[in-house]
Image 1 (spheres, one colour):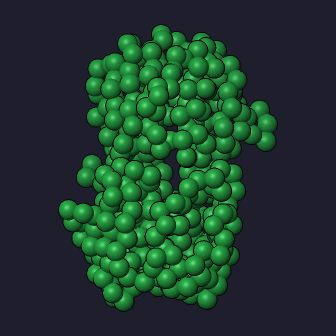
Image 2 (cartoon, one colour):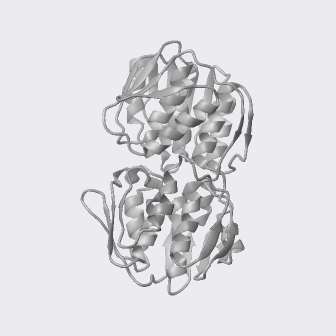
Length: 383
């Protein structure tokens, strides 16, 4: 599906969809608890992948289709290992190329055999308690997967971070959701201590609105729209709530993306049409997302008249222009690229066509419908 977005000012009221990050975690905790109720659960492709996978938690063996969801793969691999399930994990898109190095290094030291070390991965055995040494600079998703799994084991475990944990708010979110389900993980000077023999307990859980999706509307406002964003939790642990502080700063911007990698595409749009030369630092992990987001962000914005440069340290140097050109851009099959381009359209001199825009279903099924409700001019060109 391609969409043509005609430059326009958005206005009105919007409630972002439920948090994808929270929904993944709540689904897993609820499945491990054997029940409970989740209010306001997100409906999107990634969450469907996790929901379908969790139907296998009571089996002895399972084949798991992770789709294109890195969270599904990285969260559930140690969980299934802890449950002693022989599991095959398959996926598509860029997922087969996304690393799982921490698991390949650590799980075999704790009772798990990788019968295949490339996708489709196959694991067997039973996870054992102990010390897990994990680098914090690859992805916090590995820490989350272990946090969810290790309480199920008979003995105590410790996650020792061998480098500072980037995207730490996501791990904080995991600990908070686990606590709602009666399971405790303690943060320590070295990482996390997890007592074994814990039991997830059913509860009624409400998934809060997604700060990552609210970010698109926050940036749209910074570019001239007038959107009231409802339903946000001001006390949220979601790291991406930082967007609301960033858009209040005067340009040019200097942004540390260590804890907010998912905001980089839309922040790049903000910087691209703001005065001066902005810098977004610590972006190296964007090389391993749904696409190489560093290359994709620079490529698509430069294609429509932006001035974006990737520096040797994987920072983005962005020199603002008064107006982007519009034209035709690929989404690179990346939901955040597609939605960021849609926001950029407001500052284009002519309509912007986003090719492969159906990829927004990965996280925000109704994104273009919501744009239209806010007065956006969106035309579907092909299915």
